[in-house]
Image 1 (spheres, rainbow, N blue to C red):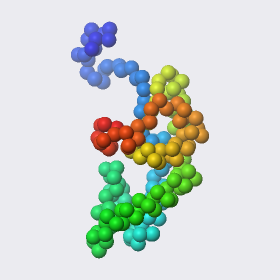
Image 2: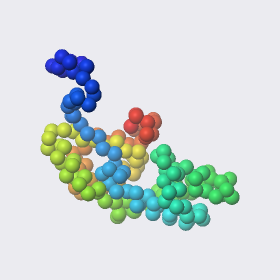
Image 3: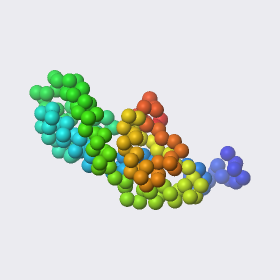
Image 4: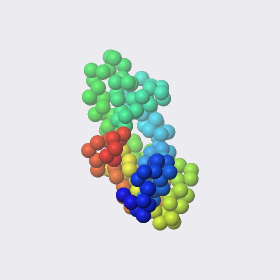
Length: 170
């Protein structure tokens, strides 16, 4: 890989210059502030299912790998009904999450300016998210309003990959 620089491959990595042609952004926590909504959703689901409330720290542990680990939050006397509770939770989430996201989700301050600056420099931008395809449209609302959605050259959702984050595939 010469690229016109005879010693390029022998330089330490920190001394090399790389041309950036595109920037890929994560969605949740990078472009949109969705964490408060997720906590509200969990609180509502737990209340409706009769699951005792969990601390934010416990919920963070339960969500650590991108999936929700119910074993962190279910009391031992409810673990035998875990599959039923998960199925009921999904129904509740499908009912309450879209309107909550539409109403409450906000762009991270400065996100629009960063995206616009990158694209005005001739660079491409894209989105990689663990959000399922069914929910992506509702979560893109703030990006749509700020004019960011039309700048995106690609959107990769959880449905587009086999391996979820933190795997390198997405």
